[in-house]
Length: 125
Image (cartoon, rainbow, N blue to C red; front, side):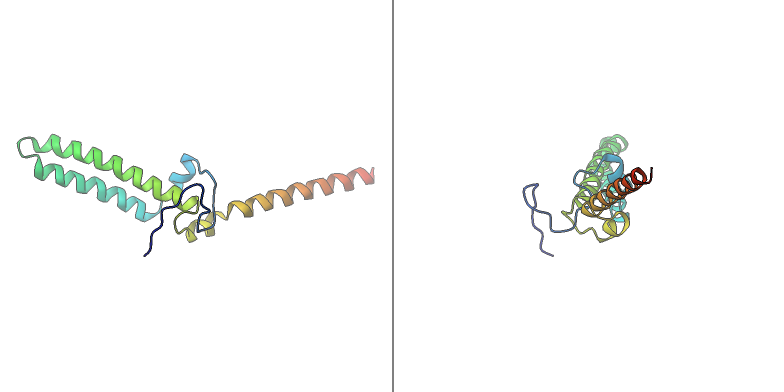
């Protein structure tokens, strides 16, 4: 696949689910592949620490696993928020949550409906 670096200046190539997803929204939108990335980074780092830390294998493995968990967490978060902002493929997220524009239009339509009801009630009185 062809990967392009996108910035906030560029329009994202996929529909936006959220312009600025919150921490809880991003974490609740993690895919199985994000959890696999986290597990791979953690276990891979632990293995590396164990193999290379011969005199003190346990502490070296634990330290490496901690660093791997941190890196895996950052990578999983980056991928999830990138999908929500439309910078990565996000078909499942759009299907599950809808798009930012769709929610904005639904909110406007709801407000217009409430105004119409208030006007109708005012005329009836």
